[in-house]
Length: 123
Image (cartoon, rainbow, N blue to C red; front, side):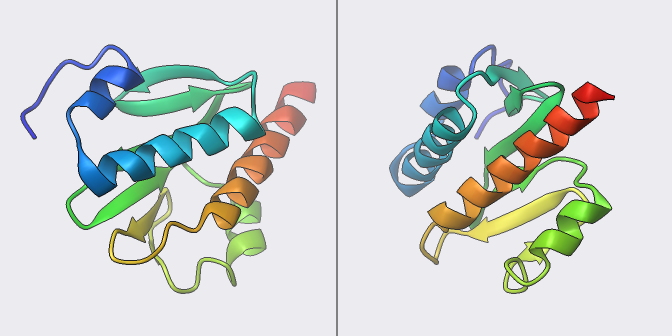
C-alpha cells in the first residue's frame, strides 16, 4: 500500500480489498453499534474513533489487523485471559488474518474502553 494522505476512514478502507477490508468494515460496525456517539477520524494515517478522548484505532497489515490504543493496566488485567493467544504490546493487539475475527471479544474491548473514557470524563 502506497503512503497516502487519508482524510476519512472510507478513504483508508478504499486502499484495501478482500478479507482485510471485510474485517475492518466489521470492526467499524462493531464500534458504531457499541458506541454510537463515537466520532470517526484519521489519526497517524489510520482509522480512529473518539469518545471522551481517543477510544480505539485500527489498521490492516498483510497478516493481521491491529487494534491499538495506549491501553491501561486495568485493561490488560481485565483481558489477560481473553488475549492470551494474541500477539500484544503495551498499545497493540494483533488479530491474525488466518483466524476468525473475534467479534465478541472486540465488542467487549470497545465496551471496556467506552467505560474507561466515561469514567475519565467524569473526573
